[in-house]
Image 1 (tube, rainbow, N blue to C red):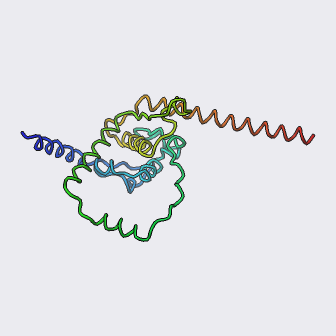
Image 2: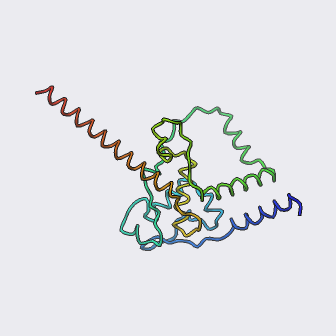
Image 3: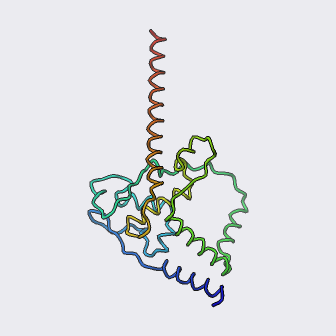
Length: 212
């Protein structure tokens, strides 16, 4: 079998896997599945971060309630750890940029590009099963905890893995390194809040002494 034929065969199997249908999950105590609940494995891997956040909220995982622990699985959603950074200020765009983007959206992609897109998607699928390891400059504050400052891609990967495990997909277990990193990040935040509280108390005491 020629290499190209073998490659196409592997790609066809991966595409078939992505077309597997997923059983919907209803919220407690009752109600329809989330509007963005993925119907196929492909749809699951195409969920946006906003949709992942919305699903976590809809099934009482990011917003605790009496129903949070009554599902077959739990996301252990850490809102501080998984919070999105504030959006950057809008940058001025030229009037012609919209037309360029519109023409790109309506342009027909080549089959080679489509295949590259599928392969990149499959790489993302495989990455979900690997722990996230960030490269931090030596001596930096975040070097001791590689999960202290997640990139957008890393944060979305964690959210996708949590949602995947929640809805019953296999291979979505949380890596030990990620658990340890999340705990360390939580401790770091607690220490920082304590330091800030101590600093404010010291300022209050200093003002009182000056006023006395």
